[in-house]
Image 1 (cartoon, helix red, strand yellow):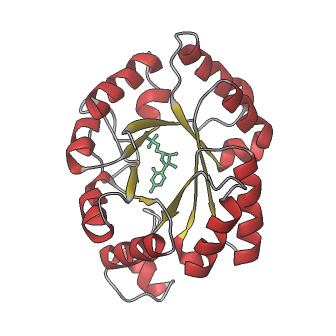
Image 2 (cartoon, protein in one colour):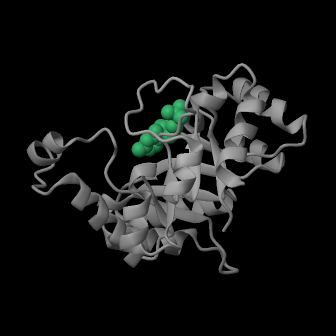
Length: 234
Ligand code: C5P
């Protein structure tokens, strides 16, 4: 599995998204893109079909979490949509994760890459203990959920580049680490806290980096994307 840069297309409508992607396809560049809840809920499955029709790979970031039967059926729909990567919350339990794989697997045995979210990066130790009643250091919880995901047959986790090494150590180097929180040395960190440059993410062993604003808000998004590819993939 090759290393790749995934552009987080955090736009709220079809016109802005396709206008942005036109800048790439006009130059015959076909980036891997991430579609999140905002765009998917605004535009529905048709936006996935339109982007796929342009020959781009899609990570559909919907973070499913429900009873196993519901997740299995929802995953079957995503699989028919032909997304390349999707995800769920590991907190849904091993039974939910196994059901997700069943739903996602096509009749010919192929399926999209399935990733787990362990703990959201917005959850801190205090919320973990006081609200979720989990009295463990958050790093242990992340690693334990990652192992649950691996044991359930998932392909990897979404995590910080700074956690990629520990995840590979605990779950094996073939277990994918897909890492947001990436910034160029000269770009604004914004609301991201635990960040790494594309080159540092590569050194730390990330398999895919997810880059949003450093590309989407750049004056020349194509140049920013190519810079990330150059620093991370080569
Ligand atoms: O603009 P930026 O590079 O910060 O975008 C990162 C993308 O990755 C956003 O779509 C964000 O929602 C997502 N993400 C994240 N941290 C996580 C999980 C997902 O930043 N832990």
